[in-house]
Length: 474
Image 1 (tube, one colour):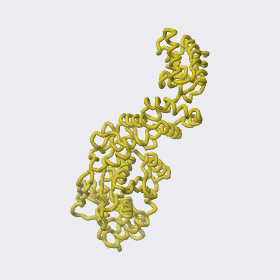
Image 2 (image 1 turned 30 degrees about the vertical axis):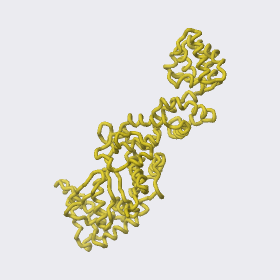
Image 3 (image 1 turned 60 degrees about the horizontal axis):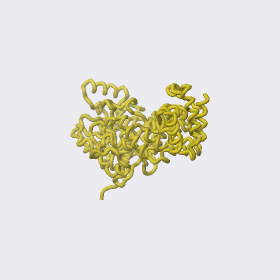
Image 4 (image 1 turned 120 degrees about the horizontal axis):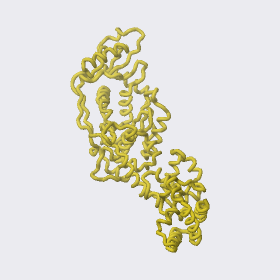
């Protein structure tokens, strides 16, 4: 019987959850969900100097926002250091590891000599077969793996194919440092084994680690999990992803107004293809995802594509859920607190009423917030410079006359106000645009907005007549 699938996402908490890490988490999550398995979350906090609580919180928060739920408790690698040491002692006892007493100066000289001679094996193995009785007094040794010196180390990678390293080029790597702390290489192998991880899916920057880790698995007599090393994400120009390209934390994408479902959909298509399909529901993603669809070349990040996809998700989102997301985003954007203070039963109802029109124009939630400005604007309205130019004495007089005409719109709806405005334009031999634009400026302070009759309906009779009076009298 085959083992149930267990994947793991294992970030180092030295910074935010970046976009590449989010995609790795997504691929692990999809693979586990497709096969009815589990995805574990392990925080690899063995680097005590660089690991921070803020980074851990950002990783957990980012995964939750993306909707990538893990199974079981979060595992913290550092808390398992005693178990990692136990594995190193086991290797020592079986003759698969040895104590190395080389000093820092000796190691530096070895590395420099090896590099000068063009060798990739930097440690010369000088303590591999030496008698520990020759050790300098008072020096704490490191424990090194007694790696094979001939033959090959091979990984059958699900994405990269068969990858081969010549053992003569691989070092006897350190398992325990002189102070007794385990190295990352050892900790990862022991954790993956103890947690029954069956599939390791990670970035291909870890490919060289796979060779070293396989040697530790072999020395311990353990089965090597199935490995998949996925290409990294590059910028649109093919260079390494930088901040200007989109190498930002997931929290930054949230603050820019992207929807979790849209970001998930965008990330799944970065480096994985399924025919020509671009838009996937979560269940479609789970059903379709397989490692054979992951390409070997780096994926290119494209903000325009993400924005268009996000716009699609906004247009197809339920209006009430957009109001909820709108409110949530105010916690993460500049000026959000001021806007949040203006949210009440009235403005929420207005926002919900305006949403069908607002979401047609918005590619991000930030654009949605900007488009809803007219609902939350204080009287008298602050008029944008471009709009101010339209408020001539003639148009102000026109606004006063329009206000009078609109008083007859009963009940106050998009239809009745439209009839009143069109009737006014006809009586005065004016084109609708000549009336609608001053009306828009008076009601929103801007030259662009949702349809003017929707604006009238959303704001309501009392507020509209008051705003028109402000501008007519100014």
